[in-house]
Image (cartoon, rainbow, N blue to C red; front, top):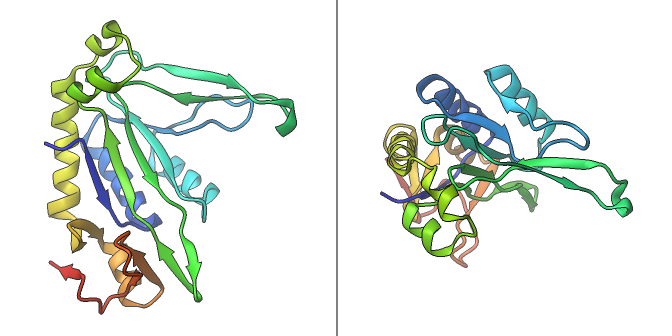
Length: 206
């Protein structure tokens, strides 16, 4: 089972994905980076998810997930900010057990919002042991079997249950597809052939 999946989503799709994670998994949803001089927030309910989506509107959404079934105590790193940006500190979750959700910021293309892919990504045990900077002791603390099981469940949900189209095999989620059909967005396929509209032959509806 792959440790990553690329898909196309707008904010409402990510709101619904987070609701699925809250209702059907034990993943804890963290913001990727804390606000300046504030602790890292855990999004424990739909209201907190909605608030972060509103706060980051137009910038893309970056989340990090960790499951208590996978690791008992994730690593949170605090780092200082330079005086040139006003000083202070921020914190972020950095752990081999974490899953990252990265929605790239959309950009304007001739008056239409151009939506880039969103990534679901995490280490596999083999990859982490070969290429990561983590100690063997830290990697041994991760329940890799549980991580793969939970990730596989979410990837199946993305690929088979809520995708309504595919672009080069990447799922297109329902709200993104509705916006695409309405002409409010185009998709960026990263294939060198330009933006993708609802009429494109590169798009496969399912």
